[in-house]
Length: 79
Image (cartoon, rainbow, N blue to C red; front, top):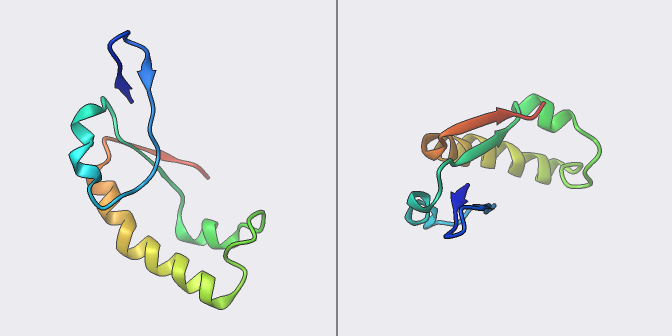
């Protein structure tokens, strides 16, 4: 969260290739994480039901999550 000129909390969400350029504007960078096995076991989201989608989840988690974790100042386990 960042604090605007009126000291109210500003929030942002998302991932972009240049997000490190925005990090100094925020007081905290929060990673909402969940273990891969828990993520793959969830059935409330239609994405991830096909083998191709599950492979993408596995690949994205193993390749991207470590980069996000490296830049996060806080991690919340959302199990």
